Structures are given as C-alpha cells and as structure tokens.
Length: 146
Image 1 (cartoon, one colour):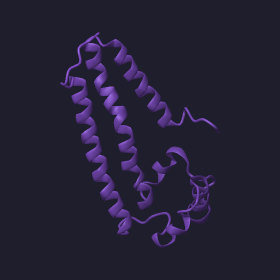
Image 2: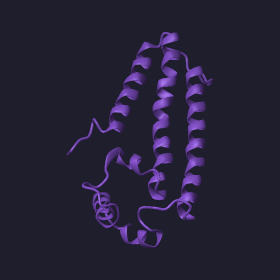
Image 3: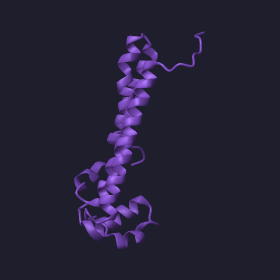
Image 4: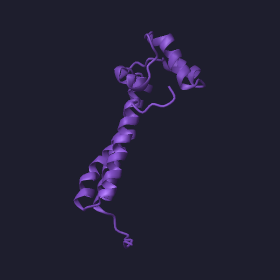
C-alpha cells in the first residue's frame, strides 16, 4: 500500500492552476456579458421588459415560445445552436457558462502527459476516458432519451 502524503502532486497543482484561471476567465466574462445584456449595449432576442413572462416555462417550452415570438426560425434553437446567436445579448451570456463548463475538460487533458510520465498509467487512462466522455457529452453525441 502506498504512503499517504499531505503534499500535492504536480498534476494536482497543474489541474488546480488551470481550473483557477478558467474560473476567473469565465467569471469575468460572466460579469461583462451580463452587463452588455442588462444595460442594453447588446440587443437581446427577448426584450428585457418581456423576459419575466417566460421564467416559469420549462426549457423546451421557453425555446419554442421565444422562437415563435421573436426568432421565427424553422426549429427552436437547441444544443449548440446558441453559437449562431452570439450577437444577441441574452445568447452571449451562454459563452461564459460554456467556458466554465469546459474548463474541467482542459484540466484533465493537461494532466495526462504528467501521469504517464510518472508511470501512473491507470490514472492517465481514467483521465483520458473522462475527457473523451465529457467531450462527447458536450457535443451532443451521447444524447439520451430523444
């Protein structure tokens, strides 16, 4: 059995450093994009004075309603379709959320080489598999229940 130490490994420190920087970037962008939205610097899809009427709706109904009332697309935007609407203040707010969600993937990918370098193959494979699964899930390829 291996000895338990109180010192962090290089991989743990790298993971923590990337996570901290990603969190700060995401949080900073969240303040900026929200300010652009709420102060009307970037026009939203749904006008601010009408947004409260949609708060009680489930996501699917909300997307269908705003599509019908404001966007007039053939289908309501789902998945990564919000990327096509980054020029609108309310959709721009999704960008920092995506960054905050994706920083964990970057952390896992970054520590894999160090794990293999110190011959921790099992943890390296687990981190690689985790990163691949998270990427597939984010891509929508692992969608369930459709």
